[in-house]
Amino acid sequence: MSTLIAGLALLIGLTAAGASPAYAGLDGPVAAYVDQHCAMDTTGSGKTTTAVPVDRVTLNLEAVAHDADNSKITAVYTIPGTSKFGTLFGQFDPARRNVTFNYTVDNPPADAMLSISYEVAWTDGTYYSTTQTRTLLHCTRDNTTAVDKEWWFDDAHVTAFQQCTTVGAWPYSIRAVDVTLHISHDLPDVPGFARQPVWVDYWIPGKKGYTSGTSGTTDSLGDAWVTFRLVAPPTGAELDILSSLRRDTSRTSPVHKWVTIGC
Image (cartoon, rainbow, N blue to C red):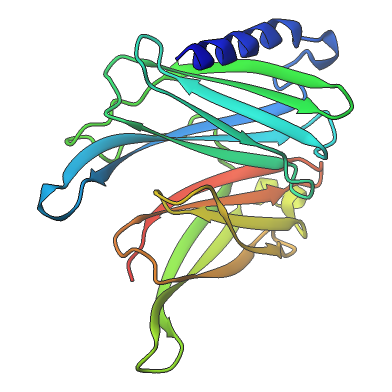
């Protein structure tokens, strides 16, 4: 716990020091997107399993006013008044200019606040840190589908399709699923997203971090069809799909979608 307190003290100190006038404004050098998603996890094994309500917290950071190269990021979540916390480390992807972190908060308490502090340090000596706070979703066994996407990008639409298949020849074939995404935009937003790159990553809770699924390019209408394959996926598990969409302004917008693996 002393390590946690020391780490938080460092982040708080850097927040105060990092509020440089050069980065004054809504986003500073880093744009942050946070959402929450209620779900159920299972602990134990065999006949002693227990269903536990969880709040899946996703933090997406985008390098806006600084190069994405050569960065180191520390992201810490806490639930003030509780012992719940988590620390993750990462760096911006140089091509898409963003990075995404996932936290799972088990048995999230009612009327609690979620605090996320993050620090970004570049090798040229530039750093930035701040704290985001919001109300924690109260996920329970009777409230397993609540979502909060207030900070996510809403100008794109993602539809997911699943096709059950197999890989390999019988009797050694392995169950698989092809996940196809249709990414589209509202007409007023088409000019900014036409003929721009798209990246798709996915995460299955219980696994470590996101896996690169596929990439593509939007057409003249800002639409894209992309497909990736999951081999021997856990049937019935949640699949977290994160699409990163480039705009003609060089900004990268995240679009988040959860689906249940049906194969």
